[in-house]
Image 1 (cartoon, helix red, strand yellow):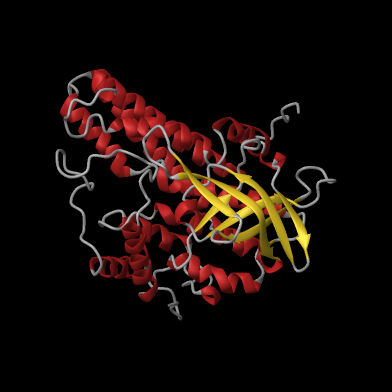
Image 2: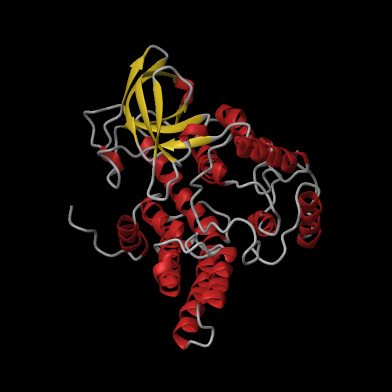
Length: 400
């Protein structure tokens, strides 16, 4: 529940967060992984986030936060938030990393992408209906954007939405929809005016994924996981009140969501201190700590991780809406992870591709195999470099 009155001092807030989290979970020791103890997975994608138990634990945790006024620290008070500055939300995320909490990857789209998108484009009634439920994990959402023939050129999509009385009939196919198999709703973009230029004839809808006419098929990945899905929509009826934004104005909705998604990837995934510590541990245990090449490679990762975190923090420090510069955050994240994967491969040699049975070694292969997907999700590296060149550096546009 939201708290009223003057905001607490940041020290008082941090102490409150520690108390609330301590009542729910144990505090981690060190950076969360002791060499040779527990799960040695090294991954930045929730490859196995599929079970009801994980979702139940996550929902219990989010309910615990809501009950103590921490469910939406920097959200508007009229929609269940606490109305504090973004620095308080950053402090909460920092302290969360120190506790053994449920994996929140299943909420990333709901919290980091759909919530700000609804704040920017939803009606007041839609905001009242969905925002608090998304933040509490009562409702879990995914995106329904990419198609087999429309990935980087998303505006070239073929899914159609046709008026049917007070609603719409949607038919088409979506692909690479993260977590669709456990989500309740999906934010779908469809073509509503085929006669208009491709960016101008699109509309977005928030669709119930248990609606008649929807089929969801998991996609098995190189890593062995199945966190992405194909979603088939056949004559799916969607009420008009589920339309987000104006008719044929869906492209602006998608742009807002993608900017927030890239911000989330850069902030929450790519510069995880625990992952950097795991690489340092790997160098200590399987490499030669006295080798200058090894020390230099690991030091470069540490420095670049700090630089990436500080760069993203600078972009977000004013608390405004994410801009095109946040494409840099995602690029920094994926480039840093690629470098970490390369360093780990150099340290491990054959153990990177053939399991020797030693803890913490072959496990790095999951990170390596998952990287191509991360470099595509949220906009390919190539598309984001164009975004930076054209919209941040104001270079001449690439010839179309």
